Image 1: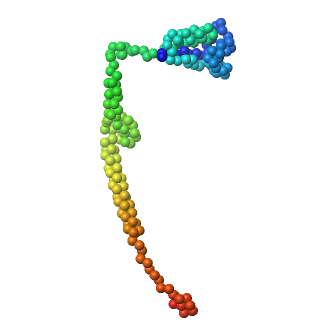
Image 2: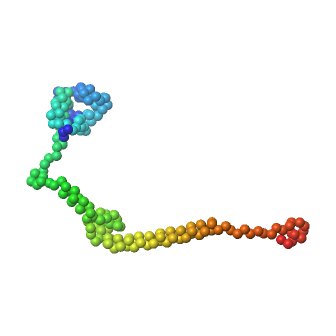
Image 3: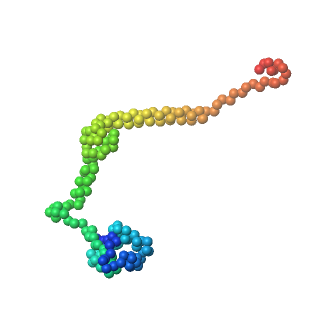
Length: 186
């Protein structure tokens, strides 16, 4: 697998007719006329990529016989002077990246990521004081949650005790409903 691409932007050779080149390309690439027209829109299109240099040059010559002017682009990374002078340790970069990430902190107020510092570079808040205040709030919330759970457990226990002990049965005396006098006694 190589690092070369064959590019086409709709340019045809001086001797060729655009319609003839379009039909030749559609036949060669196995595409319909609509897609072949899109090749001549003026935008650069990658015809084929990940080719070796010889393959890319052969494809360029083949397109030239069809009347299309293609370019071959080399995607191989170039070595810089810095890389040529110094040998780069691949593992050192990983270690440095982890160290840099560990040295960053997020502002508790605005969420800005920055190097460890006493005040936020974006909003100016005192980070340590804000973190202390946040810890106090967290402790208060945890305390309230524990108290609420204790009250809930106590209420559940009372409900369980009440459900376990049956209510006493109270019998009311029955009154005879006969006559007018019984009506007055009620």
